[in-house]
Structure formats: C-alpha cells, structure tokens
Image (cartoon, helix red, strand yellow):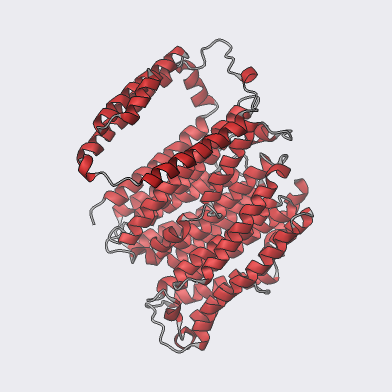
Length: 466
Length: 153
C-alpha cells in the first residue's frame, strides 16, 4: 500500500513541480527523490510497516512476491531516470518534462497495483492506469508523424484488448458460483470448467498476451516501439512489460492454477510462436531500435515459459529475468539514445572512439543473449529449468534454446559493428556521470550473473511459505 | 423496440439518422433496466450514452461531412470475407456455448432491490472503496495526458 499511495501522490507533486520551476534538473531530482522514497516505502511494506493502515477489503494482497517485484521495478525505474532522464528534455523543444515524469509515476502506481492485486477489478484498474499514460508518452513527440501514428495505433489496439479483457472478466464473474471478482474464489476447485469460465479464461489470456506483446498479438509492438521517443520505448519495453508479466503470472497462478492442464498447451503454443516470430524477424532488421523491439518480443517469449510452468523455480526466475532484462535493455537503450544513427552502420567503429561505451554495450547485449557470467544467462537458465521441472514440454525447451542461439546472431551484429568495422560512429555529447552509471549497471549485471543468489536468497523464505 | 431500432441503425443510409435511431435503442435499453428495477443504471445509461456520447457522435459526423462521394469504394470480396469471418465467429460461439447449461443459473434476486441507488452507494463506499479511490488516479492520469497532448508547443 505504501508504494501505491506514494507513487500516486508523487505523481501529483511532479505535476505541480512544473508550475514552480522550469529547470529540468530540479524536476529530475524531484523524480529521483520520489523513486528513492518509493523504494524505501516498499521496503517498509516488506518488513511489515505501513504508513497508512488501510482496510483494502481483500481487494489487494501484499505478499512478498509482489513486493519484491515492486522492488525490482522501482529499482530499474531509478536507474532509468538516472541514465536517461536528461534525454526526456531533448525529445522536442519545450517538452513538458514535469508532466512526463508525473505520467511515469502514475504508471508506477498502476504497476504496483498489478503486482499486488487480489481481485480482477483491481487488475483491470491497474492495467488501465498503466496503459493510458503510455499512450500519451508514446505520442509525446508531437511534431513527429511517426510518434503520432504509433500513439494512435497503440491507443486503438490497446482499447480493443481492454474491451476483450473486460468481456473476459464479465464472463468469469458470471461463471463464479458466488458472483465474485476475487481471484481466490474464482480459482478454488476448478477442474471441470464450464463454457463461460473457459471463454473468460481465454479472453483474459488474449488480452494479457496483447499487453505483454506475445505473438500472435504482437503486431503493434514493432511500430509502437519504433515510433515512440526512444526514452519511452526503453521505459515501455522494460519496466512496464516486467510489471505486467508479474501480474500475468499472479493471475494464472492464483486463479487458474487448478485448471492448469486445460490451458497449458495453449500457452505453450503462444510461447513457441512468440519465440519464433520475435527471433526470426529480429534477424532481418536494419535499425537497431527495431531490432530491439523484436528482441523484446523474443524475450517476452522466454518470460512466458514461467507462465507455462508455474512453480517455485518459475517465480524465482521471473524476478531474476525481470531484473536482468530490465537492466540490460535500459542500458542498451540509454546508449542507443546517444547515437546519431540508429542503423547497424551507425555503430561502426564505436569501440575506437568510445571504448567504454562499446564495452558496456557489449556486456548488455551479451546479457540479453544469455551468455554465461552475465545475469541473462541465469535468468534464461531458471526459465528453462522451471519447464524441465514440470516434466512435460521438453520440445519447447529445445525450441527455446534454438531460438536463443538465433538471438545471438543479431545481438552480435551490433558487437561486430562496434569492434570489427571501420567507421566513425557519431554520438551526442556524453557526460562523465552517464559513463560512470553505465559502468555501474554493467557491474550489476555481471554481479547478478555470478551471484544470482544475491537477489534470490531473499526469495527462498517465500518459496517455503508457498 | 430495441431490436427494431438496432436494425434501423444499421440500414439507414444517412449517418445522422443512424445516430438518432441509436438514441432510440439506448432509450429502449434504459427501459429494460427500469423493468429490472435498476433505476440508477437506467438514468446513467440515458445521461451518458443517449446524452453525452451521441452528441459527440453527431458533432463528429457533422465535422467529417460524410456523404456518398467521400465514401470509400467497397470491395465485393471484402464484404464476402467479412460475412465468412463473422459467420465463423458465430459458429465457434454457438458450438462452444451450446452445451452450456445456463437455465438453472439465471439470476435469482432475493428482493429485487439490488439495483437501487441506496445499495449501490453502500457497496461502492464500503466494499469497493479502494477501487473507487484508485480510479481517481486513472482519471487524473488521463487528464494530465490530455493537457500534455493538447498544450500548445
């Protein structure tokens, strides 16, 4: 609850900070302060201290899984703001920076709802609070036609999927014997499913699949990620996606856990298509930004593996994956923003001019590809191990490994361009603090790659309680 | 009345007439709500749909200045494809739901007062107060968004 209240209130504070000051640095520092407060508040929630005792009528349920996910998400947002916050001002002249940060905080409020919801009503509200600010952030570069197009496309498709989701929730409500939105009551003892229940489940699966850009509901992703200002692409592809995934898994664990055998094959097929389409189309891209958009679809495919096999390893893994993926992608995007040319050629010879930038970029890309010694390796390992533990779907594990091998190709194209090709990669002005932060993030990734237990030890207690 | 209105919405040539028939449909649906003893829902349906949204519709139509010349060419195959796709969806739903045994689950209200404003208020401000408050964040973010988009550069 602390996190939800603080993020909502801080959103309002950010909104008014634009009235009192026009200096970008003041606004940015306020945002950083807010994020630190959020982290502290969330930690206090975790150890059982609440600022405001609120009777939530079982609408929300604050378990450690959700709160730890919040920690990961707020932490990555903090890194995101520190790395790329300055670039929000550069999107367009006279950019309303304070309002953008306000929207970011509202999104965080939505994410913390989605990670701790206990009724479908709260899930819906959370998803909407995430989506609506995102439509605006996508279109915040108002003079850019591509950004406008992306925003409109995202809005229309998003509204449609929201409608599907509402229909699914309504059907589930009708199917529940007591007439309840509570995910616990909906889930109890469901082995023989009624047609209504099944239809509701499928519609919810489709709507959530749309939100996390799982194939075949992924068509909006490349256009939106490509059209949106790169800063916000980074935000959407990492923090928001990770948050919605946590909600996705929570929903299917608590509500549909008993009927797992009915939908597992369906999820397996979605996972396989997501992995296949994401990885294969990423190979053919010429622009690094678009390649990253497709690679984010591919990464979503890996995260879907956790949904397929809901067990202790999966819950562990999804948190590690969220952390590893968010850190690495935020890093790559932060470097991408500084490039003048977004194509692969634009990276030619970066290593000669900016060796530090190239080195950190390499670490991020290696982590995304899942090379050992980086966080991405253990993240992928946990995902695959969780599926192996279920004992079925070994074909999917093999397929996922093959897809990961394909992904190595397009990530290494960037590395190859940076190190082995001649050219003068143009970058914008780089501040020493930015470089320092990049090194810190890269160090974090390697640290998580060598000792994934640092993050997961906190989780061990929670696995036993489950 | 609702069905006749709905059919007329689809078949009238003039979009403005369609909108007017749509208002008739909403009126009829509101009547159904009153018959179900849900006065609040009936009034809200009238105010929001028949009032606000339909006026918005009319404005949009008048701004767009639709007439026969500006209508895009309709492909015959596209129409057939649409019919086939819609028919398949219908078939799927019929096939999926034909075994659904719904009759014995049809709504049984205790006293039929569940739709009254009093009960709605009780539910909204006791059990559902948290989502009620949280939805204010949603609206606030939407408003901030409108300002961001609409502000002059």
